[in-house]
Amino acid sequence: MNAIHSPFARKLGAFVSLSENEYAALDRLHGRRKVFAAGLDMVHQGQTNQAAYILASGWVCSYKILADGARQIVDFQIPGDFLGLRSVLFRTSDHNIEPVTKVEASEVLASDLLATFSETPRLATAVLWAASRDEAMVVEHLVSIGRRDAKERTAHFLLELGARLKLVGLGSASGYACPLSQYLLADTLGLSAVHVNRVLRELREDGLVTFQHGQVEIHDLDGLVELADFDKTYLDHDGPLLK
Amino acid sequence: MNAIHSPFARKLGAFVSLSENEYAALDRLHGRRKVFAAGLDMVHQGQTNQAAYILASGWVCSYKILADGARQIVDFQIPGDFLGLRSVLFRTSDHNIEPVTKVEASEVLASDLLATFSETPRLATAVLWAASRDEAMVVEHLVSIGRRDAKERTAHFLLELGARLKLVGLGSASGYACPLSQYLLADTLGLSAVHVNRVLRELREDGLVTFQHGQVEIHDLDGLVELADFDKTYLDHDGPLLK
DNA sequence: ATGGTGGACTGAGGCAGATCAGTCCGACCC
DNA sequence: GGGTCGGACTGATCTGCCTCAGTCCACCAT
Image (cartoon, rainbow over all chains, first blue to last red; front, side, top):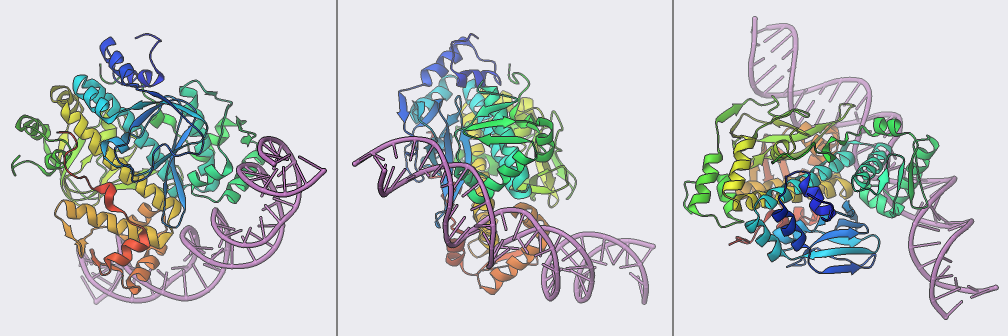
């Protein structure tokens, strides 16, 4: 295993020990590099025969829109994340994917993905693991919205983002750059933008975190962790499970 | 493909066309048949080296408990469902699994599962697909709790359950047997039990559904679908994607 | 300079759903 | 026949968060 592989390959390698051959197959998966402008959907609900993407830079969000226009953001993807897996496995996409910032991503064609699984089967297990980790995040998000109040929920979200960014080298325990508006936060947390604003002020006044000018600064990590009942084990892994 | 295979094998076969050899591998996966009494955890948060199960009969629920004792139910599993996949892929379980009724299930050992993936690799892709379908349900659940009000959310949940049960032959368009108490419903929907009771009464008074004495009767399917903005495509599949 | 736009921020008032504190009924157990 | 227990159900009150209706400021286009 050497350093020339993509962040995505490194992530999978953390779960399933990969051979040079398998690393090569992963790197071949990266198809045409595409650039997307912020705000223009990459994948649209109901669209068929969609490609998947591996994110190289920028942030995107996956969301659903209800008939009355309400939006629920399900997750954000950051560099190194795989996106649109479900749009490929089911033939039609059940959600929208929109860049939050300008984004660079490699396209992965459905046919290439399925061919890779049959040629290098351990990669199918590795992607299964990655998908399970994503599911664990969605589950934690569900628990937040269902049973944490607005303040706890916001704290939990900021902690989770921080932990994820740290794993890919884009942040530290004390803070990170975050391009999300309070409107995006609101649609993520199931709150109104007005209330998000008040909650962020409270967290600031409590000396826990500040989120201003696109920068999250964590001032009291322990306090936040306790408030949010945050347990980061669902984001971690303790070395390859499959040798 | 013949009729002797388990419901689980049939479910996977709907996505990936399986050979007799692959069906046989799936059937071998079913290990020791176990029986669990209602209310006694099958898998506990933080437990390691857990087995997974394939549900033969009965209902179970997966949930998380927060530090303050609040519970959020993430999903119910019904016969034919695979449960505890994440407990196996991560070595430690991030959630609890509890039988709602008396349950019969076949144990699947982590080592058998991983061995099956390497011997019959198409099954890894098939399980990946099943896991993605589960994720799609969790996502829909998240959207419900985040952006639907109590009545819409309850209606959506009852419709989803009905659609799932119908797929495994345990219900019809007009109703189904449902062993869930209003407390379980409350912890699923992110509501209080008191409010669930009132919402169920409203749905009854509107002539949409009744849920009484363990039986859900759907009186106005179209009305419910419209109220809940229910789109069942995320539960469906239109024949094998992988030939 | 001037107007337009998007995001952060605020106060006032309203409401959906929580909480508290019960009643009632059927199942099960001495 | 009384005791207990779990689940459905109810009324009264409280509150977290929403909605409405703004202001202010930075940035951009004309």
